[in-house]
Amino acid sequence: MQVSLKQLRYFAALADAGSFGRAAARVSVTQPALSLQIKELESTLGARLIERTRRDAKLTRAGQQVLARARRILAEVGDLEQAARLSGGLSGRLHLGVIPTVAPYLLPAVLTDIRSQAPALDLRVREAMTAPLVELLLRGQLDAAIVALPVADAGVIAEPLFEDRFLLAGAAHDLARWHGAANGARPTQITPDELLLLDEGHCLADQALEVCGMAQRQPMDLGASSLATLCGLAAQGFGMTLVPEIAAQAETRAAPGLKLLRFDAPEPARQVGLIRRASSADEGWAHSLTDILRAAGQRLIDRARAAGDPAHGGP
Image 1 (cartoon, helix red, strand yellow):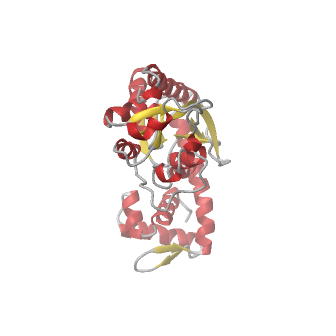
Image 2: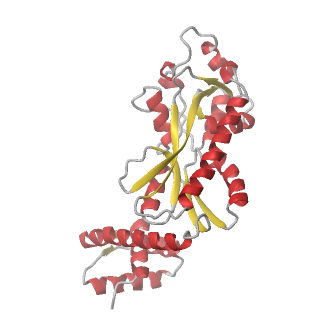
């Protein structure tokens, strides 16, 4: 008996889920069916891969070694399937990941453009933070992902899309001290106790700490799971936060009390880019997708800047 791709997929799902029940649900099979495939894999390899308990399943040392090789094999198979799906350029099915601080602002414009420019593309979108997206990408479960650069992983290649500058957001009375200030507005002038951050794991939170010159979060901050929640808190005077330009118009519409202020040059910014596996082939699809994403992102930024200089309280 030979090792099958089904067995490797089930084994990887079990390693990720940590239990037979959750793994079976992930791959849409019954628990006995998944258990049988794992037992056959162990029999074929002549090694015990899983330590079974009532509550969970843990990898043995042999299982950890097999998992590393299984992931490489599945990623290679994913590249093969991707090459076949996208051999005609930007058509067929494409799995795209997007970070939460980009997705709700960029995707509506991108989906409209894709419908008009690539009507044969079946786009499937997964929204998640950067680390899970990179992991899914390397496993072959995503074809590409939109993230904030850089991404420190040798297994991916990146194409910059656009520069997204940060604006200071808060209630009018919180921003008042910067209006007309002789020294201008600098991120480092924000104190740790007035900076609102997204929950840990969001790259925007790390970027905010970096540009504001802070080493770590405050023990009692009001971390939020979405930028919309964060802006709502800032609008109510609970503190200030950094808002990317692509989100400026949407968030000021959603939170009428939210005011924006532009920092003096050099303005802090993030670089948004498209990443894909270094091993994947680009037969025109990645270049075409990059062009669509870049154009849509630049339109959002141009609109935010054309709406007016927010130095006096809002665009």
